[in-house]
Length: 380
Image (cartoon, rainbow, N blue to C red; front, side, top):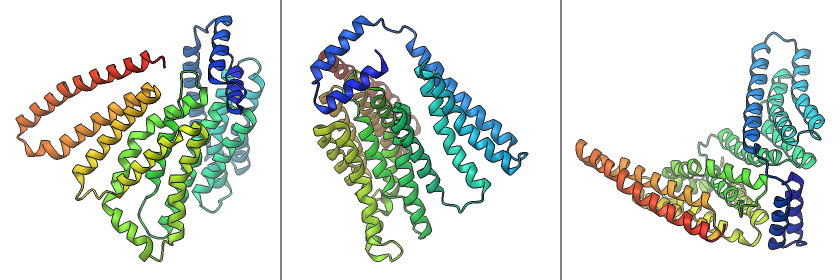
């Protein structure tokens, strides 16, 4: 199907002009009229790798010759690096849309390098979150002008990165070494991105958000407990520490928890209440003290993995089922290595680990296939 057709169908469904069944009928009709592109995925992969290699080559060329260039030459190189790809993308847009999207994406990525190099050229005051903010603003403007899913995906990555970097710099300047509530907010946002996928007819932006959420969810969920040892002391320090005003901490927590839920309401409408339950799960996980509640933390992680599996079954999303099964397996293995293996002998621990892999892997895979078959039988 054409790229514009999917975009307009999404817009009409959002406005209430076309219901879900009518949109599916239109898609089915267009799919019958238009032959399927046999080489679509190879082309997409080739363009993706080509964009990655081209961007890396440009950055390597700039870094290799940077010291030999005068200030005027450096500035000209920065401007050329940012503008050339966007101009080429605009020129090729009517001939090959996927190549135009790739070139515009490289141009926006090069904008980040251009901002950093410009600050180095003019010896600007060091405030690195401001550079990320300008980069995110450039991606947002590219999304507003081009309406490309890649620009929106870059904005979805850079905007929370800017907010997180502002908080980390703020607490660092106040000599408070605590990264909360950054992992809590980013973990909740990754769940929101993962839940952006609703059906097999999702547009490219929702698919990209689903990939971003799926890749980052488990690492961010693990990072929450890293600061749980100081969890109680940190909550008390909000009141007793003059270096960190209570208002600043409350604003940060509101942005971390309310911001992703607002994004969920925009992406999922009335179904966003499930994301509210995930926010409660994250808040309870952040309140645990890893020094005394280790067993409870593992149980809470396992419960979260089971909840993600149930969420995937309920909405018919296979990627959530697979990710939930992977999270449950990681939780069990981590618990065995950290709490069981050191209490057994060397041979007994290896035998137990082998049985855990064999029996546990067989049960998990059998359960996963059963749930996937159940989802497929539901027609999703």
